[in-house]
Image (cartoon, rainbow, N blue to C red; front, side):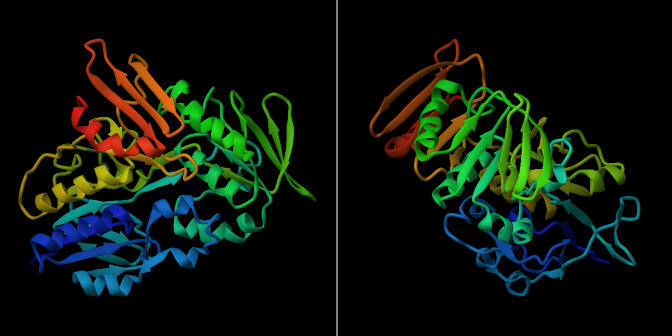
Length: 377
C-alpha cells in the first residue's frame, strides 16, 4: 500500500516542498500535519507590520483549504504530533496515527528567550500566530525595547521607529549586526538608526524585567533601569528538534541531514529552519528554496546532492537597505570600503586577494548580482 509522503510543518519550507513535488508528480499522496491553521503568510512581512499598521489577519495570503485543493493534499490542521515511530513508519497525533513511506520534518524554529527573571514578559515575533497574540500590546506600546541588534532586531527597530515609537535596542555585542559583518561596515546603518531616534545600547545585557503600574521596568547590566511598555526578544532562533530527538534521529544544533537532506533514518528527511547541513543552520529563503527543489526530487526516487550557489541576504531596513553575500562574518578578511552619498560598497578579501564577501547599500545594491558572480565560494 502506498502511504506516500507525510510532511510535519506548514511554513515556507513545507509549502515550497509541496509545490516542487507537484511539478514532478501530481498524484503521489501527500499529507501535511501542523499545529496551526496552515493558512499561508509571508514570514518576512513580520518585519514591517507595525509601520504598515497591519493586523495579523492582513498577512494571510491563502487559506489552507485553497492550498489543499490547488495541490491535491490531505491536511491535518491544528494537530499536534506527539510521537514518531521510525520502525513502524508511523506519525502519532494523540489518538490518531498516520503511516508514511517518506517523512519530512519541517518543524521550523522558535525564538530564543534569555534566562532572566521576568522573561515571561517578553514578546516574540517569529510567526503570524505570535503576532496575533501580541499585536494589541505592540500597537499600543509607545516605548519599545528590542533585545538583540542582529538581523531581526535591527529590522524591527527601524520598523517600530517608523511607526512613531520610542525604541531602545540592547545588545551585548559592540556593534550592530555583529555576527554578520564588521563594525566599520555596519556603522552606516547604525548612524542612520541614531538619526531616526533609535537608542542603541551596546556591550549591555538585560538582567531582569518586572511589571510596574506604568508598564515594564528593565534592569541593565550597567545598573540603568529603563521604563518601557513592551520588550521584544530578537536574540536568535533555536531549531525545533525535540520531535526528531525523541524518535532517536541524530541532532546537534539542528536535525542533522546529509546533502540529500536525509536524516540518520533513511526514510526521514528534514528541511528549512530545523535542518542542519554540514554543521550549519540556514534559516534564509534562498537556501530553503534550493533545498526544497532537491528534496522533492529525492522523495520521488532521485539521490541528488544539494548544491548551494552564492546567495544574497537582504537586510530589510527601508531607510538604509543592505544586500550581503559570502562569508561576511569571517574575521580574517581584509575589507575595502567605499562610501558616498548614494551608499556603501564593502568587499572582503582573503590573503590571496580573492573576493569572499561583500556588502552593498542603497543605490549601490544594483551592483550585487555582478559581485555575486565574482564571489569565490
